[in-house]
Image 1: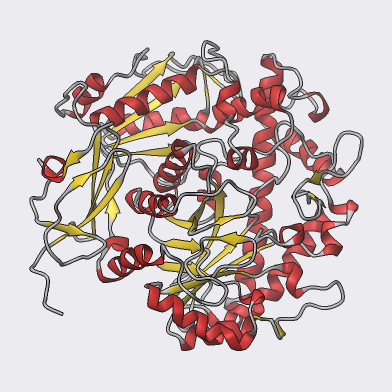
Image 2: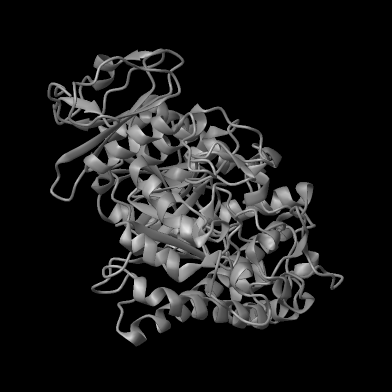
Length: 630
């Protein structure tokens, strides 16, 4: 899937076919658009056939143009809409809003007009949002793939917990408090005592061990409440689709995928990739991050690629909103290449057709190409002519992310930083890990994070392809080497991952401490785990993998071969982390299988040549032949 955005509700209905044709000429094979609740629901009726917001006409034009469609149903879709797409009768309703300890509604301070953050545990909000999904699902049903153009349907909020941290500012909506009481009563005795012993009003203001454990419990509760809300939305959509004879997305006979998205918050999103991956096969990443912090985006890409069954880049900025610092013309193209190098199986470029609050889209509002559009066109046409998106990246190592330690870090940073949500904070340059004490070996400290960063640096020095994996994720880890940050108190999901890896005879490296107790219950951990490694060096990792290790100043170059289902190479991603330019011949030395390669921008043309600049990503596909005469 190679999609580009076109907001049908921002264009005249009769101008949509021309815009779709322009996107197809650029190399897109699908079009993406939000379906904003606020556009179709004025509080009196829900309509999808008004001029200027004609969803049916948009889908009919998409099918006629031979394009696929990706629909983002929200309820919160962003798209520079007032209330991020929530209708006024929802965005201003205090009864269904998340609340503070004083009972006041939580406010999201997002221009042009502030709105009230909805409570995911509110029964009223759940009923209203499910009613919205049911209404739009009925309209979309005839257009589902394989018979129609709709290939992906994304539900859920663009920024979960927008404007607040579920750990730093718990929800005091009466329904949320009742749900917290029910979760506490249902928890096993040990977990109830350690993680539900402190009421939401008293945590995590206390930065001590009890406050951190209570913060982890709050994080677990809030994330599971959000996931339950998502599953209610998904169930509503699925109930509407098969009833009329159309296969439900993701079901037998369907080529449409029902999925959701995560913000690019590195490993600190407010909802874990593992929990989302258990609820949905398709997990998209909104790859919009501050250009000054590329490591955050790279970690988010590796985490989604290593955790989700069907990872895709659901938002790659071909342009930028006016409220973010302007990006250079090379930044969006680099982000797209990074998404492809991480092995994501589809991309959505925003914006395909520009609008007044964005700059630098592929096409402006008059459908004239932006000056950088030709660079995207070459890459998009190359994707269309190659098998790149059908390939699978096979990592040599997996670096486990213990989600309960992330919750502990968010609880600790909330004591200092307060209520801002991690997704919003990451978008504006705040890193929760910056608030951690790297000498602190508690679940709310930074010792585990320092170990993870050291292990990642060693993998990059070694140059092997690796993924980050959420320990709560659905899929088994297939990499031959697993690296796991562990403390004396370890999450049960992490312990289960270690045991599963050992049972299949794979190598496991843990540290900086030996797990002694299960984090949630406090139960002792049986013996049999590997001895901890204080500092995971590149030499140690090379020995575990049976690979050669050349210490610095050897090039720090990651080479990832993408293979199709038959095991044939369909792509090669080169990521140069060296401070110097590397000749392509050196970069290809030792790559197996031995093939000739051409640039993805022009697959099948002259053999690739030149260099791999420092900090760049270069994408190659197999095969080279002389360029044909025009």
